[in-house]
Image (cartoon, rainbow, N blue to C red; front, side, top):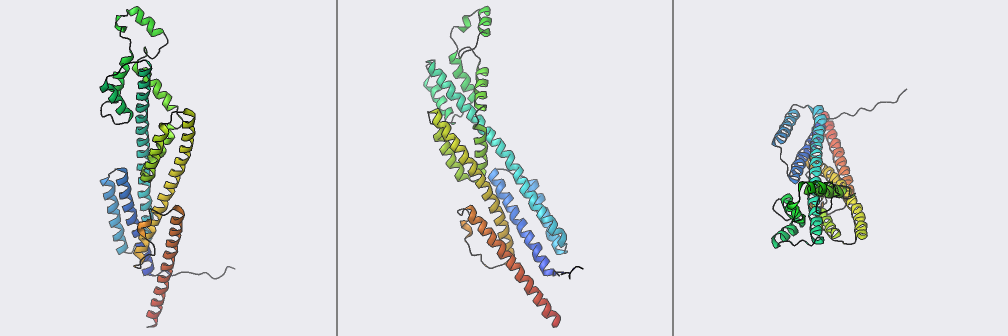
Length: 327
C-alpha cells in the first residue's frame, strides 16, 4: 500500500503572484529584444506591435483568472522573442563576415597588384599611387574594381595593338603570364588563393560574432590582427595567426556564455523586483565588470532569494487564512 498523499493547496494570492512574476519576466524579455534589435541595427514594427498586443492580452487573462494559460503561454512568448533575436543575429553575422571577406579580398588584390607593378617597374602617377594606398587602408571612396582595372591595364605591353590577328591568336594559346592574362582571370586566381586560406572564413565569422557580443573585446582583437598582418616573416605570421584564432575562439565562447548568463540574471531580477520592494544587496551597475563565475554566483543568490520570498509569502498567506477562519 502506498503512503498518505500530500496535496498542496495553492491560494488565489499565490497563483496570482506567480503569474505576475511570469509577466515581469516577459516585460524584461521585451526590453532585451529591443536592446538586441538596436545592437543589430534592425527594426520590425510589425513584430513588436504583435508582441505588445499579446502582452496586453495576458493582462486581460490575469484579470479573469486564466492562470493556467498564463503560466503556459508566457514562457512560450519569451522563447519566441529569444529565438527571433538568435535567427536575426545569425543572418547578420553571416552577412557581416561575408562582407569582411570581400573587403579582405579587395585589399589583398590591390596589394598583390601593387607588388606586381613594382616588380615590373611600372611608374605610377601620384594620384593613382595615392588611390591604391588608400584602398589598401580600406579608405578609398571610389569603385575598387575600376581602380584595379586602371592599374592592371598598365601591365599590358604598349605594342599589343600592333599585333596581327594571327599573332594575337598564337599569343592567346601560350601560357599566360602577368602581362598577357586578362584582368578577370587574374582576379579569379587571386580570389581562389585567398579562399584557400584556412584562417580567413573562421576569423571573420568569429569577429562578426564578437562585434555583437562584446564590442570592446572585438576592438582589441582587431588591433591585434592589424599588427599580425604587418608581420613580414611568413612563418612567424602563421604562428601568430594560430595563437590569434585560438584566443579569438575562446573569447567568442566566453562572450556567448556571459551574454546568456546576463540575460538569465536580468529576467530573475525583473521577477525579484515584482516580488519584493526591498533593495537588492549588490550594485546593478557593476554587472558589466564582473566575471562569469561571479555572474553564476549572483544568479544562484537571486534564485535562492526568490525561493525564500515565495516561501515566506506562502507561509504568511496560510497564517492569514487560518486566522480569518478562526475569526
